[in-house]
Length: 336
Image: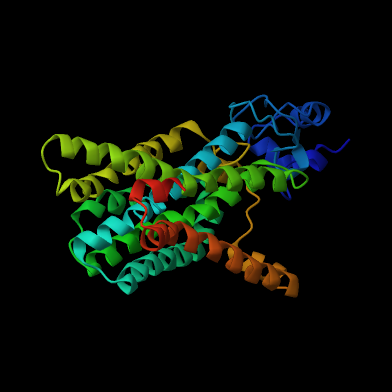
């Protein structure tokens, strides 16, 4: 049979395969074994069955497996997204304290939240073509490290303008959603890509709730208690919120440094290697827009804008609301 029928790279001929020093008989072996990698892959076998006609994308999810490339990428994607959400909304449970310390108005606080979200919107549009070109691994790592820097600088804020600028750049973390959805789609076949994206999106989004508990419900009272015991009872809340955000920032930055070395761009390896072998099947942003600019697509845009808008409003405003309307402490409001 013609081995080209089982070649995961589009329009690859037997001559090209020979030029790349690949034995055409290897295609037959991979065709008969769903766990065997295509000859162009950096791996010999996979931990999950794959579809060789879809670039070795996995056809099954083994949620308890952390083996490369497929399942490692799934877990790296959701955890990276989780950490991005953690730093994206790290200042949110502290906004009440920041407002009181700096004497800000409600409008100024909400302006900082708007700036935070606007940057995420702009960056999501810009990051799409970067994923097409470089994969999700490198952009995700860069976004985590970049967004960690302004997160760690929250404690330096002294004015409303400073808060707006810092939160504007923290919003870079919001672009992680693009990589979190692109990565599983690169690793899993179309039959289960929705399930993989759901796992990554769902578990990753928990970072927004986690940061309320971690920053507002745990770190803030601990730091405040520490400074009270040191004799700074009056300044304890301010000293606490000025230090706390450094912790999630450091964790996210460290994970961003590790990420490129423990995961893969695609089933057959990283993009730089795949480009050399011609094993790429990229779809660029402009092509995707031309193919999907339908009425249904625009309806989904509107639905996502509404649903995600509610989530952003809750993450940014819930603690402020419970503090002002019910007189709760920051730690209790964040826990709720």
